[in-house]
Image (cartoon, rainbow, N blue to C red; front, side, top):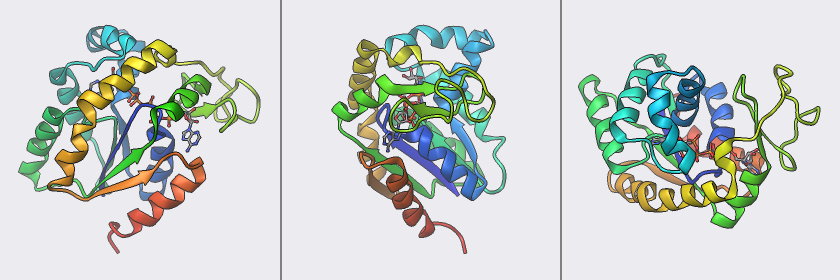
Length: 217
Ligand code: AP5
């Protein structure tokens, strides 16, 4: 299966992707995670992306498209799950062009919808593991030991772009540049709208119910 997960910052894309890729054996390709890894490694790509990410804007299309198409080429036969990419109509067009020669197509687009006011609360409480990328929340999804990752015992951190003023910019960027993708995909693909304001387990249950319809027997 090839799946795209759309949704605003903090809609729960990363949280839900973990469940889906584990169930279907897919490669999880998060453009945000890959960019953060590049920054941590001090690569030229990471340095180029830094100022855009810190201000809540989008990294230029030419950088992200090449990076993600390269990452997709390593996907197993089972497929992949795109999280945070595409994020502009131009990125979606280039994705389609990259898949076309091998006859691949996106099977389903899951669109997580959530109000901006809920996003703000989620971002304030988000904590992430800098080593494995696991995501927690200080109230909604607590680690077993406060401030420590369940998987590797590393101290959890707050993402710098979760500061309120950057979150406001990220939401504005989402509404201006990414939301139009929903209409783009609705005209020619399978788009499933998911209410992402429910608790994480309820969202997971709805997603799995929907994916069963698309999974091969
Ligand atoms: P990226 O890392 O992709 O950030 P994002 O899209 O803004 O999404 P987030 O990771 O913030 O949120 P999420 O939806 O994954 O939510 P999560 O599951 O963590 O991108 C970062 C930056 O990189 C961008 O701003 C941009 O600069 C650049 N970039 C990335 N891709 C790009 C592209 N294609 N083109 C150009 N630039 C690009 O959940 C959030 C919190 O809520 C957590 O604490 C979680 O525990 C909690 N939570 C989750 N679900 C629930 C629930 N149902 N109920 C209660 N709490 C919940």
